[in-house]
Length: 295
Image (tube, rainbow, N blue to C red; front, side, top):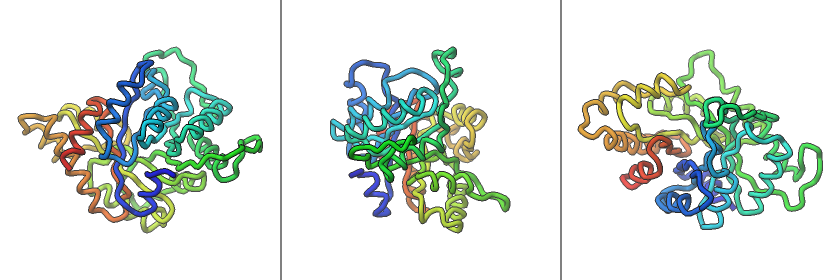
């Protein structure tokens, strides 16, 4: 049974963290990074060729972690596999004890290390959610073929926290819930007031009764990095107050880690927030572990 699912269902604040699997045929580095997070997180996300760059398969990485006593969250994209391969790989990793899934569309390979790679996109992320749901709840594939010993997936999707205006409604989240999502992990949410307003609207709309919302955070390396994120990452807004703190710090990376720890503590005080998802793709697992050690 998924530890992450148990914690969320008990309404305990969870912390998940993201690892980019190495470009290596050895599991040693992966296990070294996972060991940095042992006892500090409730789940470890394994990215699926993030930014279109080749790495160890997230399916293999999740299986390695599961077999070594860690709690993986398998990220699955639509970019590289058709529905036959997706179903087969999901069954294979479920057989190796992987239950937590995060279903994503996937980054365009044109921005990766092999820009001429042909994307598949046989499914969209909503179809991936439905696939995992039906494999779990109906014990069958889209073809209606029955699965012997169906998987026990705990299914997640992605989301962008925003300040809701009078015209906004959580239609996208409603669709994800209907497709089978049990939780979402969001894009970075550096503005706690935006997160507070967003979560309150979800509460009013009844979303939080059916879906756990885990808010993305991360240590920012520098004020320059913060400005780059504001200009280049969809849905990300680093408040000017945080940028000013970074600019005024003697060690901007250390200050960024302190800010991240404060954000996690702040999220714990917002009713309805299920947890924090810590990402540091430019700094690595060491930076995430340093943040968590300071809590």
